[in-house]
Length: 152
Image (cartoon, rainbow, N blue to C red; front, side, top):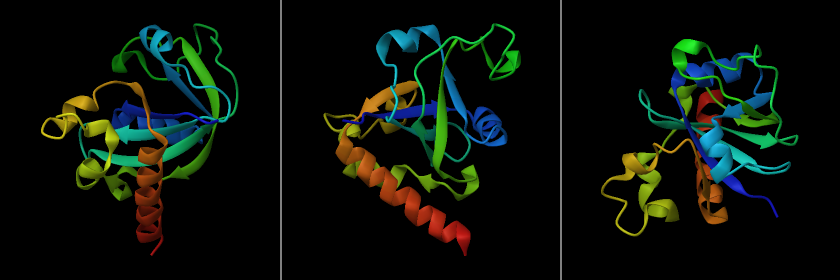
């Protein structure tokens, strides 16, 4: 059974993933201890700051690995070297400006239940967090609708 993760990243780091064709994704050691997606899992990219939108889904295509330390996924100005990676393949990818705004989805997502609706943006500061399959379906429909609008 696939697992679903919401990854909160900066618009700059999302642009780097776009340039690379969404072929890989990286995260900090601390996040590896909490969650590490496996082959077939889905990763949803939420752009924190700026547009605060859902901008894409990538499918994990390989197992977790640690690259050569010289293989920086993002520049040093964006934070520490991200030592844990997995290969991905794009599923839905949009320009952040064309992404699906997350705020209208908040009442429909289990991630924000239990009092988190009021402070929904704080919930999204975690880099990788597992979400319910129902949340994935809501987000996927919103991204598909955004992709149709962007294609017009």
